[in-house]
Length: 270
Length: 359
Image (cartoon, rainbow over all chains, first blue to last red; front, side):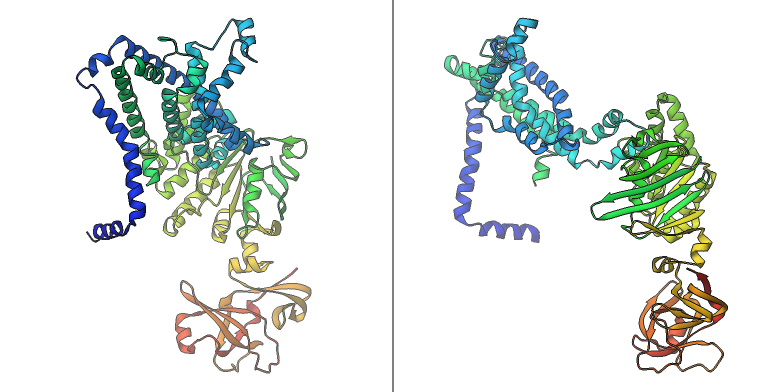
C-alpha cells in the first residue's frame, strides 16, 4: 500500500512539460490502430477474409515469409556464429555491413537486388543463361527480397545469444571428444535456442510486412508476387474495405508476434 | 606411459614455465595461490590453450610441440572435471555422461546403458533423468566426475573439483573423490589452491608460485619441510632460512635460533606454532630459544588461538629474535595471559621441536 502511495506521489510530481508530450506521443501511436479497428467492416469481415483475393495474398505472404525465414536461419545462424566466435579480421566492419539492410530504405535494397540478380544483373545474367533461372517478378524473387531485408534481425538476435552463452561449455564438449560441428549441434545450438526462436519470429514478422524491396524487385503480380502489404496498397485504390480487412489481419499477426516475444522483450525492457 | 609436460606459456606479462610428469595410477596435485598459473597449465595440457614453447606428450605420442604439432582437445584421450562442472543444462545426468561416449561414435542405446552404469558406481541411479539444475552440489560433482571418466581417458584433469562445494559437503565429497581416484588406473592431475585437498587426494604435490615450480614432493615431505613462505603458511609452520653453524642458525631475515642436531651451511628451519610457548615473565627453565616479543596479532582458529609476534624493540636481548614468529596457544592461555595486541611477553621454543634441512 505504501508502495502504491509513493508511486502516485511520484506520478503527481511529473512535470507537465514532459507529461503532455508523452501522452500526445502515446495517442499518436495508438489512435491510428484504434481507428483501423473502428473502421473495419466487422459484419462483412469473415466473408471478405475468405474471398479469393484476400486468401491468395494471405497464402502467398505466409509461404514467402516462412520460406524467407528458413533461408535466413540456414544462412544467418552460421553468419552470427562467425561474427560471435570466429576470429576473422575486420569483424567489426562485417558486423556493420550486416546491419546495413536494417537502416537501408527497402526500395534501395530492391534496386540493389535488381542490379545484381536482375536479368541483366551481375549474377542474374549468368543465372539466366546457365540455368535459365530468372528471379525478378517471381515468387522466388519475393522470397529473396524478404530474406534480404529480414536477415539482419535474425543475425543480430542470434549473435547476441551466442555472445551471452558461456563458451566454456563448448570447451567441456571438446574435452569429451566432440569435434566443432558436433559441439555446435549438440551444445551451442540448444543453449542459444531461445535467441534463435526470437530472431526467427522477428525475422518472419519483418518479412511478412516487407513492401519496398518486394515491389521493386518482384513487382506486383496477383497470385505470384502480390503479398499482403502489396495487396493492401493495391486495394486502397479499388476497394478500401478490402484494404482495411487486410490491414486488420496484419495487425493481428503483429500482436501475436509481440505476444510471442513478450517474455524476451517486454520483461527484458521492464 | 608417462605424461610428460614441459609447459611454457606467455600471456601478456605472465609467464608460465613448469615441467610436470604424471605416472600411471599416480595423482599429482598442482598446488598454488590464485593466479599462479595452475589453471593455465591444466588448460594447456587439456588442449584448450596451445603452449608457446615446450612439449606435451604421453610417452612418445606428442600432443603439443610448437610450431609443428598441436592436437586439439577433442583428439586427446583426456577427461576434465571443471571447477563449476559445466554440465550441459539441456541434457539429463545420464545424457551428460553418455555425451563423451556418443562423441566417440558409440551407438546411442549402448552409450546410455554404459552411462547409467557409471552413474550407478557413484550412487546416482535415481538421479539419471534429472537435469543438472535439479542436482545438489555434491551430486553434480559426481556426475561431472563420471562424465570425465566414462570415456576411459588416459589422463584425468581436475580443476578445483571441490571449490564449488560448501564446507559441510566438501569433507564427504573429498573422501569419496579419493576413493574414485584410487580406483582409476590412469594418470590424474589435480589443480587446487586448497592444501587439504592436495594432501588428502594426491600422491605427489607440485607447488607453483608465479608460474614456476617452487617445491615438489610427497604430502608428508611438503608438510614437514616447506621451502617457501607460501608453503609454510599452507601447512601452518614457522619457516626460516638461515646459515647453520653447529647448533646455531643465523637467520637471513634477522635473529638466530638454536637447533637440536648440529648442521652447517644454508638451511631451512621449520617448527609448528604449537611448539612455541608464551610467558609473561622471562622463564627460568632450560629452553635456549627465549625471546622478548610483542604481540602484533591475535586470530581465533578452530580450537586454538594463533598469536603473531614480532621482536620487542625495547628489550636488550642476548639472542636476537626472528622477525616474525607464530605461536598457537589455547583459549585458556589467552585468558591467563590477558593477551592484547602490543603486549610484551617472552616466547620460548624447544630446540628439539625444530626441523632443519639443507636448502
